[in-house]
Image (tube, rainbow over all chains, first blue to last red):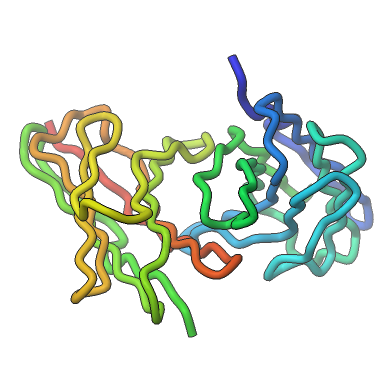
Length: 116
Length: 111
C-alpha cells in the first residue's frame, strides 16, 4: 500500500544537538510538507517542496532545515537554533497540478520530539 | 488577514446523537475546503473536500459537509455518531498557494 512513513515515532534531543526526522513517501507525489503541531494551535507549516532540489520556507522555518534530494524523501533537521523544539511533527505529501496547496494532503503518523 | 476559525475547542455528544462541527473562513473568494480527522498520536486523514459544484459533499465514515458561501462556512455533520468517531477534527482552507488549518475541535463521545 502506498503511504508516508515517518521515523522515528519518538525522538529525544539533548540541548545543543541537531536531530533529523525522516519522511519517505511512495505515492509518487511531487509536493511534500513539514508541519509542526502544538496543542490548541492546529498545524503550522515549516517547509514545503514542490519538486526535487527545491524547497520553500513556511511560516515557522527558523531553526529548521530540509533537503529534497529524492522525490520520495524530505528529511527535516531540527537545529540547536530552534529554542522550543518540543512538538509533534507531521510530514505530508500531495500531487501538484500547479496549485500545490489546493490539493488534499496525505499525512504520515508523525514524530514526537522531546528535549531531555 | 486570511484565517480559518473553528469556534468549538471541545464538543461532547452521546453515541447515536447527531453532530455538527463548525468551520468559518475569511477569504475574498471561494477557497478549496477540507476536513481532516486525527486520532491520538497519529497523522491526519482526509474526510472530505470541496472544490466547486454541489455545496453538499459526502465523505468517508458517514460524514458530510455543506459549503455556505453567504456565511463563509463549511460545517461538518454526521447524523449518528459512533464511539469510534472520538478524535480531533481539523478544517483546512487552500487558497492562492497557501493552506491554513483551523485549531481543531476535539470530539468526545459519551456512551
